[in-house]
Length: 148
Image (cartoon, rainbow, N blue to C red):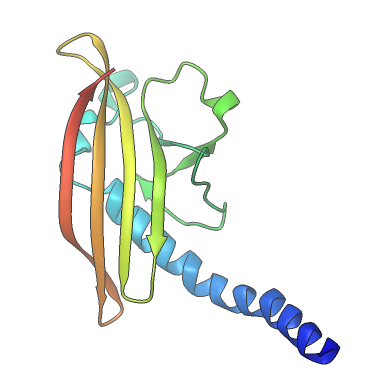
């Protein structure tokens, strides 16, 4: 019985490590598709000379590894803690990022400053992905605007 327990503990330790490479790859691909959503592009912040600012992801609820390789306009995503996000009006906050072998379910809000209403707003987004022939594709999209 003790041997079986030690084997089970060993498997629990090593198996997640072998799956993490696949997980980081899938996470990166899905997160890149989230960032590239056409419905969000117009809400991304601009800096001086209307150049795109770096996109921020709040590491709260769901946190991403620094190994996740995602960028927007040749700038990597900035992963920030709640304390570091400060008064930034534009950032992603994920509350579900569930990946199975061939399906994924993602829920998040993209918080931003609405220039039209001169107030903070958010896009609440729910996405379903399917993996076919090694590529993740968005199969269902639900986006709502929320005034904050």
